[in-house]
Amino acid sequence: MSDIESDLEKLRLRALELRARRAKIVQSSEVVIDPRVRLKCSIPLCDSYGRNRMCPPNIISVEDFAKALSCYRFGILVQFEMGYGETEIKNRFKGKSLEALHQDNGYVEKMTEGMRGMSLTLGQLEKEALYMGYRFAVALSGGCCRLCDECVGPDPASKCRHPFQARPSIEAVGIDVVATAEKAGMKVEFPAKGKGVWTGLLLVD
Image (cartoon, rainbow, N blue to C red; front, side):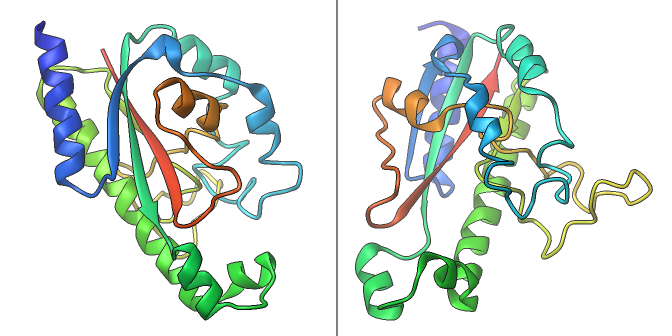
């Protein structure tokens, strides 16, 4: 086993020690880029589009990200379970529409807590990869950044409150999460059945 393979395995195990449900080492060439993923940020319009600093159109373009991705050799796909399971949703939110579910304070708090934990875990993995000597290590979270209750927005005059922790999502840079996870043998159900699974990515070289 080479040094980088050994380090990747250490990072994979570290992800599981933190809060990840699953983690798998992948070749960067297995990461699927599809511009239609970015398209879904604006059609239908996500409520974070143009408002969240870590969301389109305030972040790197799909084309520029694809160029950067081609310079990496490895990645670690990291999955997290969060939110309520299917049975809990049926019992707690019986008869509610999906829109009503997303407006329920209990559901929103549960999802926000999970998304913040995911972002912090991925940031920690990136930090540990940097300390290993991988100076280009970069982490991407899943979904929009939820580190703050309300983002300061894209205005350059307003500084991000968490500049070293905030990360764009893998969807925002055009990564097809479902296709990439399937290639890695980490099935993602869409729409989700049971407890939701969110996926992040650590790129290492």
